Length: 156
Image 1: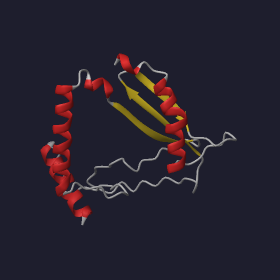
Image 2: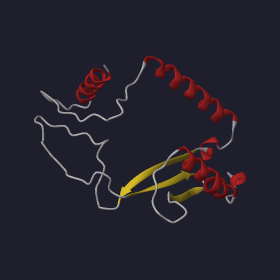
Image 3: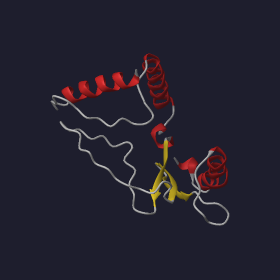
């Protein structure tokens, strides 16, 4: 069912943007993301909370921190799982890649105080590793919090 919802939304968005296609070939994300009825209420609650914080806390915007991680394949492969191809015909593009190419996962944070990172996920021997809950928690505990403590957070 989410695919139909996404296809409807994709066609609706293409019409709103002025893109008119008789038929669309869309490559969907493997996650099957969709907007649900309760999401609207949760977003509204978040906006109300944020507006209140902006009114009450001076320089609230300076306290917001954005973080993300990215995977870099060491063989030059580019992961296009979140790319969308819009075409009137199926492009039939195939890219052969090794089953498990070596990759490096990098984490970084951005905020009013600057950039924290990058942090490279590696094991004790210096080999690249996949990220799991324990490794992410270790990064937060052993890297991020000490880095944040080294910053003059009170000035923000």
